[in-house]
Length: 64
Length: 313
Image 1 (cartoon, rainbow over the protein chains, first blue to last red):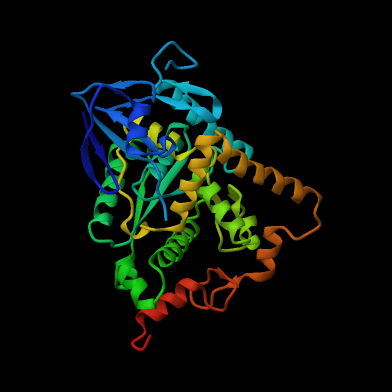
Image 2: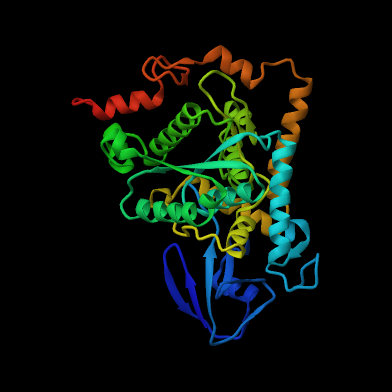
């Protein structure tokens, strides 16, 4: 699967299928600080991302 | 994961409420929470004119959208900071939202450009006055927001500060024991003196993640990119620390900030100390240059502008 990340903007490849919760673990990200979006839809942590899918892991934290 | 209110697939789990919502139920939940914030903190009434500070980010555009959907009379102010690339992109998001969503509700966008006023963008200006960029930016935004609200007779100014912002700010103030700032951490600050507009934070009950989810569900096209000047900011460190605690113990952020508000309210009820309004009325006088309230003879904004325009600096 293709995973798009921000801050800095980059794409990484992960082996699928994988639950959203496991993607957070693999990327060492705190779920409270991100949303996972497939197409235009949000995904919950128990949903599975297929190997051929593209997702965006979008940070939600802002401000200086 | 299923929505707790209907049989649909959930789009967001909310561990702090031990619940999960589908898109429509999330939308209803968020709007209800904002309405509760407005009423419980006596922020404004349906007939009031509201000025929202917008940046193009998720919080301010979401606040604008929610207030319009709830039927409030809300306009917006965008301050163009002149940060190469970033300001153009954020300005474009705000203009697009104004055109696509706000105009049809009779709401307008006001734009203030820092460069028109100061002769330089924020980065250059901060360099000229030898101050950190974020502090220069804060002074300008607070000043212009208050000026525009006051001059245009808005009843109240609203910002998109959320639960994460307020909890992180509280953590910072407590860690540094900046007690004088604690009183200013209420979601509603009164128009304490002539020249100061009332300030409110209607999103203080919502986390950043919930607001971002609302924005995605409701197709609010916001700027995901972070301000390049905010890199390494202390607030981001505090937010990260609080999110780690939140993962271990859901509800930590709301217990911390809402608990503080409860204690503040109880203390005010039994204390004979001066209220913030009393203190402001004792310490603030009109700025000799612009007339906005200040503790000094000349306000920090006018001092900064004078310094920026001075040939000797």
